[in-house]
View (cartoon, rainbow over the protein chains, first blue to last red):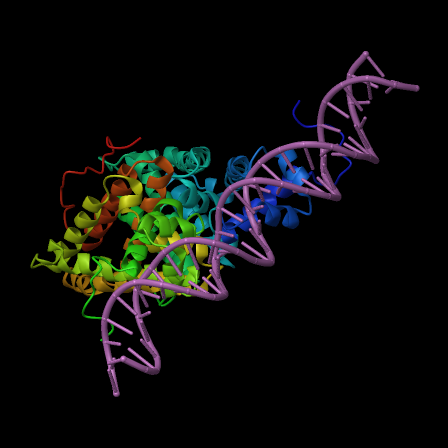
Length: 218
Length: 218
DNA sequence: CAACATACCAACCGGTTGGTATGTAACTGT
DNA sequence: ACAGTTACATACCAACCGGTTGGTATGTTG
């Protein structure tokens, strides 16, 4: 009901603006990206922008929601769900996240993490949309974390809190990577997180290409 | 040699601008804070601003350096250095950091973490100043971490990488706190980090008021 | 006391900002 | 066929942006 069925344009101006927002905001931040920047990048005019979004703030909210949708599609289709053991699925998730941390910094960092840091005090709507995105993604990890903990006899750890901790490590890794201009430090932090969960569950740390002994960094 | 000895003003315009920058940038971000905002908050005019700083960018660099100086003074004088055992000093550091995470969000979050997230691609000078601040602080932890690891027979962990990981956890905790509008989630992540280091060194997790079993959060 | 430097200030500048008012071509329901 | 709606484009605006100007009051130095 919301979308017209026949659309002779290859891509709608709305979708192009949303994709431009994801790209530009990750690169320059929300306040650092002007409406004109977005329109130029999307190849549309300001009329189109304000036809679809009542304000720049509203575009920020829509971009955060768009980010939630595209990332949840990416993660739900990823291969890390395949291991039979829940703890192995958690490890596979972290390996997947580490593998994503590559290339140029704006390509792998988090849109909503970037936006919420700038806008948390100034735009309640953007803050809420970013919070929903982060917490929603963390929630997808809770089931595996919870069963992994109980099957390994770990008590006293709230799986929700641990899921949020994984997101904190990732977000923090992104900031360090931005500061150093190098993704390696973010991958290192994910490796430490993996080590933590292995120690928690009393299993040997699953070896992988990235070593925690940092010849990779510094 | 750098500072004039006689200064009849109670505080110089430069210092007031720097303090205003620390406050406003943490609240609204670097691009979200205008030069006029800073001047109004500092109670000076734009003429004074551009007398001391050749550009807004230069103020960003100066604010990052100012942040490095004030925080290093705070941390070097803090009580967490007093325990005899190096591992206890690391735990005390993390307790100290957790205690700092209280009150309104702009009051405990990190200036350079906020700035570098926005400016890493657009201002190389600000990025470098923020990187120096973060890495410089991490470096102050390396000696204690290194001796703690060796005295507990932990091998294969680079103390530099672990020091940077502690900063990643803190920075990530700040982002989650901004998203949720609640410091509790950041304290939880620090508690998980403390748990990790305890497990790494094979010591019991030091109990403290904040429990990892999160009745605090969510 | 002359010569100069420092520490500001008020007014202003061109360009950019988010946002609006109006126009119009294409599509849709009847 | 035609009225109405959707999907944009063009042109524009007031406010604000970072930065400059020309000036003054207060030192400091020889």
